[in-house]
Length: 165
Image (cartoon, rainbow, N blue to C red; front, side, top):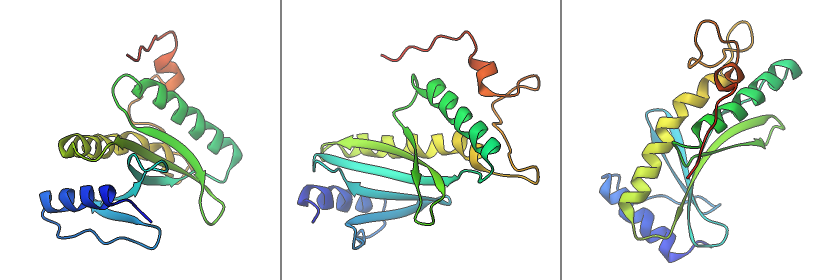
């Protein structure tokens, strides 16, 4: 059972966005679709906040391609540390495939503007990660952030220092 704080916070968010009342699933989650991105809102495991997640896509079944995807995801995570609070994780889908999931955590229930900002951040980061799991005819699209001479994000980050304060 979810907390009243969780449902009350989502009620306020849905009203602010003029969506009516949120509809809660059997798993005590609520979801919304924003420009084709399915966001799932759930009460944090400790009951102290809200988790917002979205599934970006599944990794390739080909071992070599999946390895390159994971490497690029790790490098992009490192590059994003100083700019975003979004967490990228791999998890097993119901069908057994590995999928890339982005998540943000909102601690507390009272600062609606902060929650809105985190959701906007999550939506902006989706466009960075989607190319890493999108396949073309060759099986792997790669990252659009790379320059013409770069073959991986490690080329971009080689020798770089990233600070997270």
